[in-house]
Image (cartoon, rainbow, N blue to C red; front, side, top):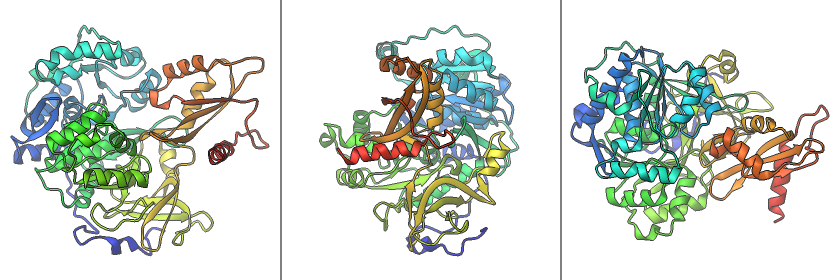
Length: 563
Protein backbone atom coordinates (compact mmCIF):
# COMPACT_ATOMS: atom_id res chain seq x y z
CA UNK A 1 0.00 0.00 0.00
CA UNK A 2 2.80 2.38 -0.93
CA UNK A 3 0.56 4.57 -3.12
CA UNK A 4 -3.02 5.63 -2.60
CA UNK A 5 -5.54 4.65 -5.23
CA UNK A 6 -7.67 7.74 -4.58
CA UNK A 7 -7.15 11.22 -3.10
CA UNK A 8 -10.67 12.68 -3.21
CA UNK A 9 -9.73 15.56 -0.91
CA UNK A 10 -7.93 17.33 -3.75
CA UNK A 11 -11.34 18.03 -5.30
CA UNK A 12 -12.23 20.01 -2.16
CA UNK A 13 -9.17 22.31 -2.25
CA UNK A 14 -9.84 25.98 -3.00
CA UNK A 15 -7.86 27.36 -5.95
CA UNK A 16 -5.52 29.26 -3.60
CA UNK A 17 -4.10 26.10 -1.95
CA UNK A 18 -1.69 23.97 -4.02
CA UNK A 19 -1.83 20.19 -3.75
CA UNK A 20 1.98 20.09 -3.79
CA UNK A 21 4.57 22.61 -2.61
CA UNK A 22 8.20 23.23 -3.51
CA UNK A 23 9.81 23.20 -0.08
CA UNK A 24 12.86 25.20 0.92
CA UNK A 25 15.79 23.00 1.90
CA UNK A 26 17.02 25.24 4.67
CA UNK A 27 17.61 25.14 8.40
CA UNK A 28 14.90 26.28 10.75
CA UNK A 29 17.05 29.10 12.12
CA UNK A 30 17.37 30.38 8.56
CA UNK A 31 13.85 31.75 9.02
CA UNK A 32 15.05 34.14 11.72
CA UNK A 33 18.09 35.27 9.75
CA UNK A 34 15.91 36.03 6.72
CA UNK A 35 13.28 37.89 8.77
CA UNK A 36 16.00 39.99 10.41
CA UNK A 37 17.39 40.91 7.00
CA UNK A 38 14.02 41.72 5.44
CA UNK A 39 12.29 43.29 8.48
CA UNK A 40 15.12 44.41 10.83
CA UNK A 41 13.15 47.12 12.66
CA UNK A 42 9.79 45.36 12.72
CA UNK A 43 8.64 44.16 16.14
CA UNK A 44 9.16 40.41 16.43
CA UNK A 45 7.57 40.10 19.83
CA UNK A 46 5.78 41.98 22.56
CA UNK A 47 6.04 40.74 26.13
CA UNK A 48 4.22 42.52 28.94
CA UNK A 49 5.34 45.93 27.70
CA UNK A 50 8.70 44.92 26.23
CA UNK A 51 9.19 45.10 22.45
CA UNK A 52 11.96 43.31 20.57
CA UNK A 53 12.70 43.83 16.87
CA UNK A 54 13.67 41.07 14.46
CA UNK A 55 17.24 42.38 14.36
CA UNK A 56 17.43 42.37 18.17
CA UNK A 57 15.99 38.85 18.37
CA UNK A 58 18.44 37.59 15.75
CA UNK A 59 21.43 39.16 17.48
CA UNK A 60 20.37 37.86 20.91
CA UNK A 61 20.06 34.35 19.45
CA UNK A 62 23.55 34.59 17.95
CA UNK A 63 24.98 35.81 21.27
CA UNK A 64 23.48 32.82 23.06
CA UNK A 65 24.70 30.46 20.33
CA UNK A 66 28.28 31.66 20.74
CA UNK A 67 28.09 31.39 24.51
CA UNK A 68 26.74 27.84 24.24
CA UNK A 69 29.80 27.02 22.15
CA UNK A 70 32.01 28.63 24.80
CA UNK A 71 30.69 26.26 27.48
CA UNK A 72 31.27 23.22 25.30
CA UNK A 73 28.15 22.71 23.17
CA UNK A 74 29.07 21.21 19.80
CA UNK A 75 27.03 20.45 16.70
CA UNK A 76 24.60 17.61 17.41
CA UNK A 77 24.65 18.07 21.20
CA UNK A 78 21.30 18.38 22.95
CA UNK A 79 20.23 21.57 24.71
CA UNK A 80 17.12 21.35 26.91
CA UNK A 81 14.77 24.32 27.23
CA UNK A 82 12.41 24.38 30.21
CA UNK A 83 10.75 27.77 29.84
CA UNK A 84 7.30 29.31 29.80
CA UNK A 85 6.41 31.52 26.84
CA UNK A 86 8.87 34.40 27.19
CA UNK A 87 11.36 36.18 24.94
CA UNK A 88 14.00 33.89 26.45
CA UNK A 89 12.13 30.85 25.11
CA UNK A 90 12.40 32.17 21.55
CA UNK A 91 16.03 33.29 21.97
CA UNK A 92 16.97 29.93 23.51
CA UNK A 93 15.28 27.91 20.77
CA UNK A 94 16.93 29.71 17.87
CA UNK A 95 20.15 30.26 19.81
CA UNK A 96 20.52 26.51 20.32
CA UNK A 97 19.87 25.93 16.62
CA UNK A 98 22.41 28.60 15.60
CA UNK A 99 24.91 26.72 17.78
CA UNK A 100 24.19 23.57 15.78
CA UNK A 101 22.51 21.89 18.77
CA UNK A 102 19.35 19.80 18.91
CA UNK A 103 16.60 21.36 21.02
CA UNK A 104 14.95 19.26 23.74
CA UNK A 105 11.72 20.99 24.77
CA UNK A 106 10.81 20.30 28.39
CA UNK A 107 7.50 21.09 30.05
CA UNK A 108 8.06 23.50 33.00
CA UNK A 109 5.38 21.59 34.93
CA UNK A 110 7.44 18.41 35.01
CA UNK A 111 8.46 16.99 38.38
CA UNK A 112 11.90 15.60 39.22
CA UNK A 113 11.21 12.06 37.99
CA UNK A 114 10.07 13.32 34.59
CA UNK A 115 12.99 15.75 34.25
CA UNK A 116 15.49 13.04 35.16
CA UNK A 117 14.12 10.63 32.57
CA UNK A 118 14.06 13.18 29.76
CA UNK A 119 17.56 14.55 30.47
CA UNK A 120 19.06 11.08 30.83
CA UNK A 121 17.37 9.71 27.73
CA UNK A 122 18.23 12.69 25.53
CA UNK A 123 21.75 13.09 26.89
CA UNK A 124 21.26 16.85 27.14
CA UNK A 125 24.44 18.68 28.23
CA UNK A 126 22.81 22.05 28.96
CA UNK A 127 19.47 23.07 30.45
CA UNK A 128 18.03 26.59 30.10
CA UNK A 129 15.29 27.03 32.68
CA UNK A 130 13.22 29.50 34.68
CA UNK A 131 14.34 30.38 38.19
CA UNK A 132 11.02 29.00 39.47
CA UNK A 133 11.78 25.48 38.23
CA UNK A 134 15.51 25.52 39.00
CA UNK A 135 15.11 23.79 42.41
CA UNK A 136 13.55 20.78 40.65
CA UNK A 137 16.30 20.65 38.03
CA UNK A 138 19.02 21.03 40.67
CA UNK A 139 17.75 17.99 42.59
CA UNK A 140 18.28 15.65 39.64
CA UNK A 141 21.23 17.29 37.85
CA UNK A 142 23.83 14.89 39.26
CA UNK A 143 21.78 11.89 38.08
CA UNK A 144 21.81 13.16 34.47
CA UNK A 145 24.40 14.12 31.82
CA UNK A 146 23.66 17.83 32.43
CA UNK A 147 26.89 19.85 32.75
CA UNK A 148 25.52 23.40 32.81
CA UNK A 149 22.27 25.02 33.90
CA UNK A 150 21.44 28.48 32.57
CA UNK A 151 18.81 30.30 34.63
CA UNK A 152 16.55 33.20 33.73
CA UNK A 153 13.43 34.78 35.21
CA UNK A 154 10.27 36.42 33.93
CA UNK A 155 11.56 39.74 35.27
CA UNK A 156 14.66 39.64 33.06
CA UNK A 157 12.72 40.86 30.03
CA UNK A 158 10.21 43.14 31.73
CA UNK A 159 10.41 46.94 31.38
CA UNK A 160 10.98 49.19 34.40
CA UNK A 161 9.29 49.28 36.92
CA UNK A 162 7.67 45.91 36.25
CA UNK A 163 11.05 44.18 36.50
CA UNK A 164 11.46 45.49 40.05
CA UNK A 165 7.93 44.71 41.20
CA UNK A 166 7.53 41.29 39.57
CA UNK A 167 9.76 39.25 41.96
CA UNK A 168 7.55 40.31 44.87
CA UNK A 169 4.40 39.34 42.97
CA UNK A 170 6.00 36.03 41.99
CA UNK A 171 6.89 35.19 45.59
CA UNK A 172 3.38 36.10 46.77
CA UNK A 173 1.69 33.96 44.08
CA UNK A 174 4.00 30.95 44.18
CA UNK A 175 5.62 31.11 47.60
CA UNK A 176 8.95 30.56 45.83
CA UNK A 177 11.93 32.88 46.07
CA UNK A 178 15.05 31.54 44.41
CA UNK A 179 18.37 33.00 45.54
CA UNK A 180 21.15 31.85 43.22
CA UNK A 181 24.90 31.91 43.56
CA UNK A 182 26.29 31.60 40.07
CA UNK A 183 29.26 29.30 39.40
CA UNK A 184 31.10 27.84 36.42
CA UNK A 185 28.22 25.40 35.90
CA UNK A 186 25.27 27.54 37.08
CA UNK A 187 25.02 30.50 34.74
CA UNK A 188 22.93 33.64 34.35
CA UNK A 189 21.09 33.91 31.02
CA UNK A 190 21.30 37.70 30.89
CA UNK A 191 24.96 37.78 31.93
CA UNK A 192 25.83 35.29 29.20
CA UNK A 193 24.11 37.35 26.54
CA UNK A 194 25.88 40.54 27.59
CA UNK A 195 29.24 38.96 26.72
CA UNK A 196 28.13 37.00 23.65
CA UNK A 197 29.45 37.54 20.12
CA UNK A 198 27.02 38.42 17.31
CA UNK A 199 29.04 36.44 14.75
CA UNK A 200 27.22 33.59 13.02
CA UNK A 201 28.78 30.17 13.63
CA UNK A 202 29.64 28.23 10.45
CA UNK A 203 27.63 25.00 10.35
CA UNK A 204 27.33 22.10 7.95
CA UNK A 205 23.76 20.88 8.30
CA UNK A 206 21.77 18.59 6.02
CA UNK A 207 18.17 19.76 6.65
CA UNK A 208 16.68 16.43 5.56
CA UNK A 209 18.89 14.30 7.78
CA UNK A 210 20.01 16.42 10.72
CA UNK A 211 17.77 16.84 13.74
CA UNK A 212 16.49 20.18 14.96
CA UNK A 213 14.33 18.83 17.75
CA UNK A 214 13.73 16.00 20.20
CA UNK A 215 10.11 16.37 21.26
CA UNK A 216 9.08 13.92 23.95
CA UNK A 217 5.77 12.13 23.74
CA UNK A 218 4.45 9.29 25.85
CA UNK A 219 3.15 7.05 23.12
CA UNK A 220 0.54 4.57 24.28
CA UNK A 221 2.82 2.54 26.55
CA UNK A 222 5.97 2.95 28.57
CA UNK A 223 8.07 6.01 29.36
CA UNK A 224 8.15 9.08 27.13
CA UNK A 225 9.94 8.67 23.80
CA UNK A 226 11.96 11.34 22.01
CA UNK A 227 10.42 12.08 18.61
CA UNK A 228 13.21 12.94 16.16
CA UNK A 229 12.20 15.86 13.95
CA UNK A 230 14.60 17.15 11.33
CA UNK A 231 14.98 20.73 10.18
CA UNK A 232 13.17 19.69 7.01
CA UNK A 233 10.23 18.13 8.91
CA UNK A 234 9.63 21.41 10.73
CA UNK A 235 10.33 23.67 7.74
CA UNK A 236 7.87 21.64 5.66
CA UNK A 237 5.09 21.79 8.22
CA UNK A 238 5.56 25.53 8.69
CA UNK A 239 5.43 26.08 4.94
CA UNK A 240 2.31 23.91 4.68
CA UNK A 241 0.77 26.05 7.40
CA UNK A 242 1.55 29.19 5.42
CA UNK A 243 -0.13 27.79 2.31
CA UNK A 244 -3.21 26.74 4.30
CA UNK A 245 -3.50 30.27 5.72
CA UNK A 246 -3.13 31.88 2.30
CA UNK A 247 -4.81 35.17 3.23
CA UNK A 248 -2.13 35.93 5.82
CA UNK A 249 0.45 38.50 4.67
CA UNK A 250 4.19 38.52 5.37
CA UNK A 251 5.24 41.16 7.85
CA UNK A 252 1.68 42.29 8.60
CA UNK A 253 -0.08 39.86 10.95
CA UNK A 254 -0.20 39.85 14.74
CA UNK A 255 -0.41 36.46 16.45
CA UNK A 256 -1.35 35.67 20.05
CA UNK A 257 1.35 33.36 21.42
CA UNK A 258 -0.51 31.69 24.29
CA UNK A 259 -0.01 28.10 23.14
CA UNK A 260 3.11 26.86 24.93
CA UNK A 261 6.23 26.87 22.76
CA UNK A 262 7.41 23.71 24.55
CA UNK A 263 4.54 21.86 22.85
CA UNK A 264 5.10 21.05 19.18
CA UNK A 265 1.71 22.56 18.24
CA UNK A 266 2.59 25.98 19.65
CA UNK A 267 6.15 25.68 18.38
CA UNK A 268 5.08 25.19 14.75
CA UNK A 269 1.80 27.06 14.36
CA UNK A 270 2.83 30.04 16.47
CA UNK A 271 6.59 30.49 16.90
CA UNK A 272 8.02 28.98 13.72
CA UNK A 273 5.18 30.31 11.55
CA UNK A 274 5.55 33.78 13.03
CA UNK A 275 9.30 33.85 12.44
CA UNK A 276 8.95 32.50 8.88
CA UNK A 277 6.37 35.14 7.98
CA UNK A 278 7.74 37.98 10.13
CA UNK A 279 4.57 38.26 12.20
CA UNK A 280 4.50 40.05 15.53
CA UNK A 281 4.07 37.66 18.46
CA UNK A 282 2.15 38.83 21.52
CA UNK A 283 3.70 36.51 24.08
CA UNK A 284 1.49 35.34 26.96
CA UNK A 285 3.51 33.38 29.60
CA UNK A 286 0.53 31.30 30.73
CA UNK A 287 -3.08 31.04 29.66
CA UNK A 288 -4.91 34.04 31.10
CA UNK A 289 -8.29 34.80 29.45
CA UNK A 290 -8.36 38.41 30.66
CA UNK A 291 -4.83 39.12 29.41
CA UNK A 292 -5.65 37.55 26.05
CA UNK A 293 -8.86 39.54 25.64
CA UNK A 294 -6.96 42.75 26.38
CA UNK A 295 -4.12 41.79 24.05
CA UNK A 296 -6.39 40.99 21.10
CA UNK A 297 -8.06 44.38 21.40
CA UNK A 298 -4.92 46.44 22.15
CA UNK A 299 -2.67 44.90 19.50
CA UNK A 300 -5.37 44.20 16.90
CA UNK A 301 -4.36 40.54 16.82
CA UNK A 302 -5.32 38.71 13.64
CA UNK A 303 -4.38 35.11 14.55
CA UNK A 304 -5.07 33.11 17.69
CA UNK A 305 -4.13 29.40 17.46
CA UNK A 306 -5.25 27.50 20.50
CA UNK A 307 -6.82 24.45 22.10
CA UNK A 308 -10.57 24.12 22.76
CA UNK A 309 -10.13 24.96 26.45
CA UNK A 310 -8.49 28.26 25.47
CA UNK A 311 -11.48 29.30 23.39
CA UNK A 312 -13.89 28.12 26.09
CA UNK A 313 -11.96 30.20 28.63
CA UNK A 314 -12.42 33.36 26.58
CA UNK A 315 -16.07 32.71 25.80
CA UNK A 316 -16.91 32.17 29.46
CA UNK A 317 -15.02 35.21 30.71
CA UNK A 318 -17.43 37.81 32.14
CA UNK A 319 -15.61 40.67 30.36
CA UNK A 320 -15.74 39.26 26.83
CA UNK A 321 -18.44 41.73 25.76
CA UNK A 322 -16.25 44.65 26.87
CA UNK A 323 -13.53 43.87 24.32
CA UNK A 324 -13.38 44.35 20.58
CA UNK A 325 -12.24 41.04 19.08
CA UNK A 326 -13.13 41.87 15.48
CA UNK A 327 -9.48 41.99 14.36
CA UNK A 328 -9.28 38.17 14.55
CA UNK A 329 -9.15 36.64 11.06
CA UNK A 330 -8.29 33.00 11.69
CA UNK A 331 -7.82 30.41 14.42
CA UNK A 332 -6.82 26.77 14.11
CA UNK A 333 -7.78 24.62 17.09
CA UNK A 334 -5.79 21.52 17.93
CA UNK A 335 -4.76 19.11 20.71
CA UNK A 336 -8.32 17.98 21.41
CA UNK A 337 -11.72 17.71 19.67
CA UNK A 338 -13.35 21.10 19.07
CA UNK A 339 -17.01 21.19 20.19
CA UNK A 340 -19.29 22.57 17.48
CA UNK A 341 -20.97 24.90 19.99
CA UNK A 342 -17.60 26.45 20.93
CA UNK A 343 -16.72 26.94 17.27
CA UNK A 344 -20.02 28.66 16.55
CA UNK A 345 -19.92 30.93 19.60
CA UNK A 346 -16.31 31.98 19.00
CA UNK A 347 -16.93 32.83 15.36
CA UNK A 348 -19.92 34.92 16.39
CA UNK A 349 -17.86 36.75 19.02
CA UNK A 350 -14.90 37.51 16.72
CA UNK A 351 -16.34 37.35 13.17
CA UNK A 352 -13.19 35.34 12.37
CA UNK A 353 -12.90 31.72 11.30
CA UNK A 354 -12.19 28.95 13.82
CA UNK A 355 -11.49 25.47 12.45
CA UNK A 356 -10.22 22.18 13.82
CA UNK A 357 -7.03 20.44 12.78
CA UNK A 358 -5.43 17.11 13.57
CA UNK A 359 -1.89 15.92 13.99
CA UNK A 360 0.63 14.32 16.28
CA UNK A 361 4.06 15.11 17.64
CA UNK A 362 5.32 12.57 15.11
CA UNK A 363 3.91 14.68 12.23
CA UNK A 364 5.49 18.00 13.27
CA UNK A 365 2.48 18.19 14.15
CA UNK A 366 -0.25 19.07 11.58
CA UNK A 367 -1.40 16.55 8.97
CA UNK A 368 -5.10 17.28 8.51
CA UNK A 369 -7.23 20.40 8.96
CA UNK A 370 -10.46 22.01 7.92
CA UNK A 371 -10.32 24.84 5.42
CA UNK A 372 -10.20 28.22 7.13
CA UNK A 373 -11.86 29.87 4.14
CA UNK A 374 -13.85 27.24 2.32
CA UNK A 375 -16.04 24.23 2.75
CA UNK A 376 -16.08 22.34 6.00
CA UNK A 377 -18.15 19.55 7.50
CA UNK A 378 -19.50 19.41 11.02
CA UNK A 379 -17.65 16.87 13.14
CA UNK A 380 -14.86 16.40 10.61
CA UNK A 381 -11.19 17.06 11.34
CA UNK A 382 -10.86 18.16 7.71
CA UNK A 383 -8.70 16.99 4.81
CA UNK A 384 -4.97 16.21 4.43
CA UNK A 385 -2.52 19.04 3.91
CA UNK A 386 -0.52 19.41 0.68
CA UNK A 387 1.85 16.50 -0.03
CA UNK A 388 0.31 14.58 2.87
CA UNK A 389 -1.20 11.18 2.18
CA UNK A 390 -3.67 9.83 4.72
CA UNK A 391 -5.47 6.54 4.57
CA UNK A 392 -7.48 4.24 6.79
CA UNK A 393 -6.08 0.78 7.44
CA UNK A 394 -8.94 -1.69 7.37
CA UNK A 395 -8.94 -3.77 10.54
CA UNK A 396 -10.44 -6.71 8.67
CA UNK A 397 -8.62 -6.70 5.35
CA UNK A 398 -5.33 -5.17 6.47
CA UNK A 399 -5.33 -2.83 3.48
CA UNK A 400 -6.81 0.50 2.40
CA UNK A 401 -10.34 0.76 3.81
CA UNK A 402 -13.44 1.68 1.86
CA UNK A 403 -15.07 5.10 2.39
CA UNK A 404 -16.87 5.31 5.76
CA UNK A 405 -15.14 2.13 6.99
CA UNK A 406 -13.53 2.59 10.41
CA UNK A 407 -9.88 1.67 10.81
CA UNK A 408 -6.53 3.01 11.97
CA UNK A 409 -5.44 6.35 10.53
CA UNK A 410 -2.09 6.15 8.72
CA UNK A 411 -0.07 9.15 7.49
CA UNK A 412 2.74 9.56 4.97
CA UNK A 413 4.38 12.89 4.16
CA UNK A 414 7.52 15.03 4.40
CA UNK A 415 6.54 16.22 7.90
CA UNK A 416 6.56 12.68 9.36
CA UNK A 417 9.29 12.10 11.94
CA UNK A 418 12.59 10.37 11.36
CA UNK A 419 11.85 7.99 14.22
CA UNK A 420 12.14 7.64 18.01
CA UNK A 421 15.43 8.58 19.68
CA UNK A 422 17.50 5.46 20.45
CA UNK A 423 14.45 3.23 20.02
CA UNK A 424 14.73 1.39 16.70
CA UNK A 425 12.21 -1.28 17.71
CA UNK A 426 9.57 1.31 18.67
CA UNK A 427 10.29 3.17 15.42
CA UNK A 428 9.85 0.02 13.35
CA UNK A 429 6.61 -0.87 15.15
CA UNK A 430 5.20 2.59 14.38
CA UNK A 431 5.58 2.27 10.63
CA UNK A 432 4.15 0.09 7.92
CA UNK A 433 6.56 0.79 5.10
CA UNK A 434 6.56 4.59 4.76
CA UNK A 435 3.22 4.90 6.53
CA UNK A 436 3.12 6.12 10.13
CA UNK A 437 0.58 4.24 12.25
CA UNK A 438 -1.15 6.85 14.41
CA UNK A 439 -3.02 4.48 16.71
CA UNK A 440 -6.11 6.67 16.23
CA UNK A 441 -9.27 5.15 14.81
CA UNK A 442 -11.27 7.01 12.21
CA UNK A 443 -12.75 6.98 8.74
CA UNK A 444 -12.85 8.97 5.50
CA UNK A 445 -16.07 9.83 3.69
CA UNK A 446 -16.55 9.73 -0.08
CA UNK A 447 -15.39 13.33 -0.49
CA UNK A 448 -12.10 12.93 1.37
CA UNK A 449 -13.08 14.44 4.73
CA UNK A 450 -11.71 12.57 7.75
CA UNK A 451 -13.34 11.86 11.10
CA UNK A 452 -11.93 10.64 14.43
CA UNK A 453 -13.86 7.82 16.05
CA UNK A 454 -11.58 7.20 19.01
CA UNK A 455 -8.30 8.70 20.11
CA UNK A 456 -5.38 6.48 20.92
CA UNK A 457 -6.76 3.57 22.82
CA UNK A 458 -5.89 4.71 26.30
CA UNK A 459 -4.57 8.25 25.99
CA UNK A 460 -6.31 11.06 27.86
CA UNK A 461 -6.25 14.57 26.39
CA UNK A 462 -6.88 17.14 29.11
CA UNK A 463 -6.70 20.81 28.20
CA UNK A 464 -4.50 19.98 25.22
CA UNK A 465 -2.01 17.93 27.27
CA UNK A 466 -1.48 14.23 26.51
CA UNK A 467 -1.76 12.04 29.60
CA UNK A 468 -0.88 8.37 29.44
CA UNK A 469 -2.72 6.22 32.02
CA UNK A 470 0.18 3.85 32.56
CA UNK A 471 2.41 6.68 33.81
CA UNK A 472 -0.21 7.78 36.37
CA UNK A 473 -0.88 4.17 37.34
CA UNK A 474 2.81 3.50 37.99
CA UNK A 475 2.92 6.39 40.45
CA UNK A 476 -0.24 5.20 42.20
CA UNK A 477 1.11 1.66 42.42
CA UNK A 478 4.05 3.01 44.43
CA UNK A 479 1.65 4.19 47.16
CA UNK A 480 1.88 1.69 50.03
CA UNK A 481 -1.84 1.00 50.47
CA UNK A 482 -2.70 0.54 46.78
CA UNK A 483 -3.18 -3.02 45.53
CA UNK A 484 -4.62 -2.43 42.06
CA UNK A 485 -5.32 0.66 39.98
CA UNK A 486 -6.74 1.59 36.62
CA UNK A 487 -6.80 5.12 35.19
CA UNK A 488 -9.19 6.40 32.52
CA UNK A 489 -10.27 9.71 31.04
CA UNK A 490 -13.71 11.07 31.86
CA UNK A 491 -15.46 14.07 30.24
CA UNK A 492 -14.74 17.48 31.69
CA UNK A 493 -16.65 20.60 30.56
CA UNK A 494 -13.52 22.77 30.57
CA UNK A 495 -10.52 20.50 29.93
CA UNK A 496 -12.30 18.18 27.49
CA UNK A 497 -11.20 15.19 29.54
CA UNK A 498 -9.79 14.74 33.02
CA UNK A 499 -8.24 11.87 34.94
CA UNK A 500 -10.14 9.37 37.08
CA UNK A 501 -8.41 6.61 39.04
CA UNK A 502 -10.12 3.37 40.13
CA UNK A 503 -8.29 1.92 43.12
CA UNK A 504 -8.45 -1.33 45.06
CA UNK A 505 -6.82 -0.87 48.50
CA UNK A 506 -4.70 -3.61 50.00
CA UNK A 507 -6.65 -5.97 52.21
CA UNK A 508 -7.32 -4.56 55.64
CA UNK A 509 -6.11 -1.09 54.69
CA UNK A 510 -7.99 2.10 53.97
CA UNK A 511 -6.79 5.03 51.88
CA UNK A 512 -7.30 8.68 52.75
CA UNK A 513 -8.16 10.46 49.51
CA UNK A 514 -6.54 13.77 50.48
CA UNK A 515 -3.29 12.01 51.46
CA UNK A 516 -3.28 10.13 48.16
CA UNK A 517 -3.91 13.35 46.25
CA UNK A 518 -1.04 15.07 48.06
CA UNK A 519 1.22 12.14 47.18
CA UNK A 520 0.28 12.35 43.50
CA UNK A 521 1.02 16.06 43.39
CA UNK A 522 4.55 15.36 44.58
CA UNK A 523 5.18 12.76 41.89
CA UNK A 524 3.22 13.99 38.88
CA UNK A 525 2.87 17.21 36.91
CA UNK A 526 -0.30 18.97 38.06
CA UNK A 527 -2.23 18.27 34.85
CA UNK A 528 -1.69 14.50 35.31
CA UNK A 529 -3.01 14.30 38.88
CA UNK A 530 -6.36 12.46 39.07
CA UNK A 531 -9.34 14.71 39.66
CA UNK A 532 -11.53 11.81 40.76
CA UNK A 533 -10.78 8.69 42.82
CA UNK A 534 -13.10 5.72 43.14
CA UNK A 535 -12.29 2.97 45.62
CA UNK A 536 -13.50 -0.56 44.84
CA UNK A 537 -13.20 -4.07 46.21
CA UNK A 538 -12.14 -5.37 42.79
CA UNK A 539 -11.62 -4.29 39.17
CA UNK A 540 -13.01 -6.04 36.09
CA UNK A 541 -10.47 -8.47 34.59
CA UNK A 542 -9.98 -11.03 31.86
CA UNK A 543 -9.58 -14.70 32.74
CA UNK A 544 -5.82 -14.24 32.77
CA UNK A 545 -6.04 -11.30 35.17
CA UNK A 546 -5.65 -8.34 32.81
CA UNK A 547 -7.65 -5.32 33.99
CA UNK A 548 -10.39 -4.42 31.51
CA UNK A 549 -10.01 -0.68 31.12
CA UNK A 550 -12.73 -0.46 28.49
CA UNK A 551 -15.29 -1.95 30.88
CA UNK A 552 -14.65 0.92 33.29
CA UNK A 553 -14.95 3.40 30.42
CA UNK A 554 -18.31 1.90 29.44
CA UNK A 555 -19.51 1.94 33.06
CA UNK A 556 -18.68 5.64 33.30
CA UNK A 557 -20.46 6.30 30.02
CA UNK A 558 -23.63 4.58 31.25
CA UNK A 559 -23.52 6.53 34.52
CA UNK A 560 -23.48 9.80 32.58
CA UNK A 561 -26.32 8.67 30.33
CA UNK A 562 -28.44 7.81 33.36
CA UNK A 563 -27.90 11.11 35.17
